[in-house]
Image (cartoon, rainbow, N blue to C red; front, side, top):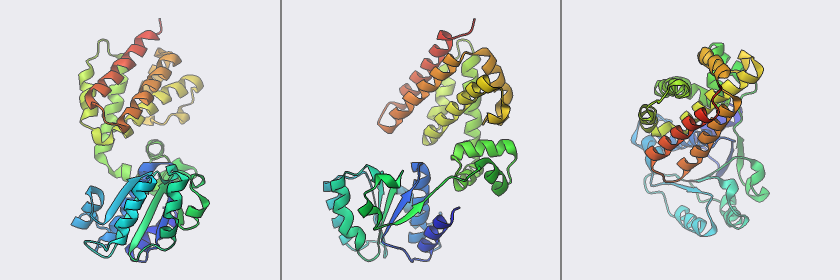
Length: 315
């Protein structure tokens, strides 16, 4: 955990917060988890225990926490009216603005005065992917917290989490190199079990003739809460096949626990097959940001991947 992140969390736990924070990270999921950790420590009387009613409300819905995404001017006017009212349950109120770097200049400018002098007990948390996407006048009114991945992530994760080289490679890829994220994933035995199942099903999809899509679709449907992460697992596996196909360098492979399967697929399929399968997953991924029929979307993806397999199959 970087020093500035530690200070952020300590400020919440000690109830010595500033009026506005700008959280900068290329991965919104990492930023969201840090925001929730901060808010749990702020609203919880036990330092962010993660078990009490206050902590559960942080993630499930708290009357004194307002969450908005890339708001327009009209929505921010309502936000400013919200923060002007006293907290309902305690002494703090929080406004979390995700994708704050997507706000229009007019919307950002409407926040300036409040960011400079927020009401007592009110904290603004602006989540952005890059500080360069934020107006300098906004950034200057916030404490900037940069959440960066570890340099030499595999080595850092192996040392910090007592992981062997193969496990460190997997955790570094799944976490994007963020140590706290890698620690969370390592402890999440349910997700790691799902990862193993998805990798097995992806390999079967490559080889089984007339494979029934239903088993794979059932697995993904039963894992809705982590679908985006599991689609990334599928992509990483196929990417490993491509990388090994081109380089024959096992140390560049992320899924070290699947080396034998990856070597076989690299010999048995064309790069066109694997590349187009990855494209199918990427195209499907964006649909989960909007309301869709989950089952139909997943089944369509798997059928399209099968179609690519037969279209580019080696003779």
